[in-house]
Image (cartoon, rainbow, N blue to C red; front, side, top):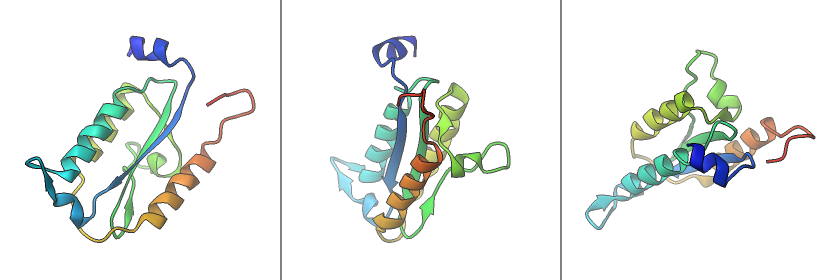
Length: 127
């Protein structure tokens, strides 16, 4: 983490949107597409540092966001600091994603934009 932080010193806002529709069970090189999506997501999560803010959204017929660890649903309304605890929480969420349903991008993208709007940087913060 210290190396990543020095290589990318500017904080980032990152939202990862995962298609978990039924088509994601399709095999490619003997592995389901959803498995590639999960591995890629976890790789990205592990490149972030605590100065970054992040969220993960999954979608098929419905949009799903990670539940909040504090019971208030904080992960549903704002981007979270990319602390080790939050990254672990996101990884658990990603690893539990099932596949089913159709592919409805519009609601997922609207949710991503809503999260970005709710987490706008302040005037002195550059992201």
